[in-house]
Image 1 (cartoon, rainbow, N blue to C red):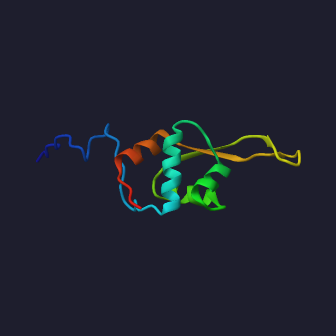
Image 2: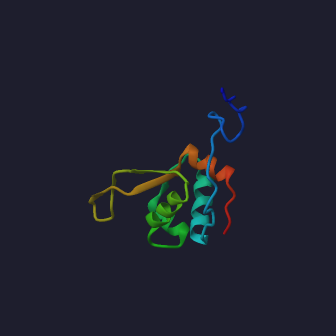
Image 3: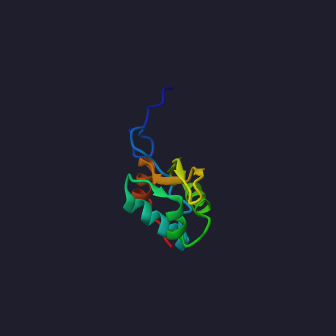
Length: 110
């Protein structure tokens, strides 16, 4: 007996991006960083700025927590010279296209 294939629906259509909207409660630090990354658009945000925006001295931990919630965030390092004249490689962050899509699709609460 042949089974008929079901009509394409939002649940099984391969061309429709799907995001799981679970665990979307953000703490105030995470919410401030998300808002800043959204406002920055495609521009990079320095790690030191993430620290200041979050109100914490460990911005990478805030970024990691956001990534665990399904928000894709790119990171790159840039060569700079610190105040002592030594080379350093501070990090920069920005949302990926999928990160923007997840934030637009899934509601977040504080």
